Image (tube, rainbow over the protein chains, first blue to last red):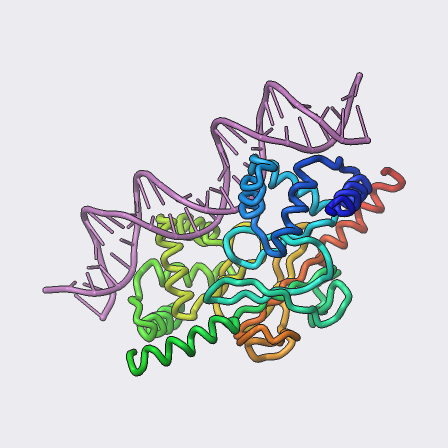
Length: 153
Length: 153
DNA sequence: TTATCTGCAAACGCTTTGCATCGGA
DNA sequence: TCCGATGCAAAGCGTTTGCAGATAA
């Protein structure tokens, strides 16, 4: 079931001049299982739990290799550690200030620098948008606690 | 000459319920002298060089206080350390992949969430755009070294 | 006078590096 | 076979925390 993934990853790593090793395949499979926006540590924890891989260094190494091969995209959403996601469709991120949850947001234009700066700063090859705000769940929790709190505060 | 700054900072800190202390005034003055996009360490180095302040902790403390008072804005441009700039007009950032230089870029709309995500993820109060690419200087250097290199490589 | 702030020292979390060993092609 | 990858251990770097003494209001 995950063999097609392994085959594709193997091929794309080789295309990038990299070897298809056990840790690398394990890391990208973990990323697929866990879904987007995982930190290196979360990937590591998952692999340790499933007794697949125990070295933190290898997780870092593998993430770098997979990113080089264009299979994984690092995304800094400003929450301490770097997060990683499978490189599928290009999108932006919304981060809830309360709970820290990260959601994907479609980009305005389908192409990869989906925005162009007004100023002529040079050649732009990428534009990342990071939205901040309050997610629906936290807004709901707010409303609920407002009811509960009554006129306190 | 910098007294108006000191007075304004004092007032705005007090408005935020914070004290106007020597380190805080020193940090914002350093930020003004150095210009935008300084790391805590760069601010610290500047203040040490000018024999104004020697504690790294106080630089961090002050930056937090100034950010709370809305006088300073932290901007994560994805280069390891957090950078800080005086909170003036709202803008985005362009980071050169070669030299790491950061340039300011006007936002699309003057208001503060200058972009709206397509998806309804919740209440968005901020949108930061981070552009990556190659700045003019590095493009120029490239052209020059291409000439020099001739057919090497 | 007192709550706030400072600033040293130490801890902390994420990430990288050095290096001997291992293994994919 | 041999270069590239692994993975332990340790360092590195930016940042935060604990706390006793100092200070703005």
